[in-house]
Image 1 (cartoon, rainbow, N blue to C red):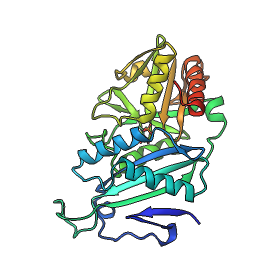
Image 2 (cartoon, helix red, strand yellow):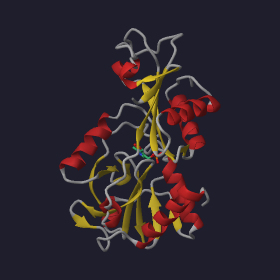
Image 3 (cartoon, rainbow, N blue to C red):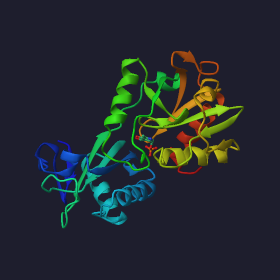
Length: 282
Ligand SMILES: Cc1ncc(COP(=O)(O)O)c(C=O)c1O
């Protein structure tokens, strides 16, 4: 049976219970992280825990554990759930209090961690590339905070699913911000473009790695958002996230991207990404 962590206890998922007065449940008042684990080892853990702290600061919430504390919890849970490849989901909410918009005082945060096996992606995602649609970015103006309030992201992702696509690329004021659950990239004249790390996008841990790998490969990148028109004329489009890694988008709104096949820069970076996963070196 799967073990989860809840407020200091390791217990079977079925026995873990949270109050209906938890602010995560009533108000979506919480933040989260998703950390991939390969061969029992968390990938880029420090970076994920630093981003967690950043998100907590952004919503004025105390961190229930320091980095060492979280590391112990994650290692124990991963071990109890059989090591191998897993995705750790970690959530902190402001805790249990009578429903009120104003923050309660003296309340302990709720800390929850679970792990799920990482499902291998369908092979065709990399062989043929995925489909994406463009949609209006209907989210709030603090998308750099990894908040649990994912209704807009969920609506947009469902829109993609209904259109037979695997991701929705979001346009705000005519510029691409990111995907509904990923960062996004466009290659134009051989240069990789991705939106800058501001309040319009989540500062993706995979995004940082992709840019490090691009630099090591001698590729040129710019942290600048592209317009919808530039996107339509891009040679390559990619998305990245901790669980989907780096994927090529070969169909955008029903039209072929570039040659309609995964492009050469993606091929190189994916190879470097896989090597990094094995060897830990850029
Ligand atoms: C909106 C959004 N942007 C970007 C990402 C990618 O972030 P990371 O690479 O840290 O998984 C995610 C991940 O789920 C996301 O939900």
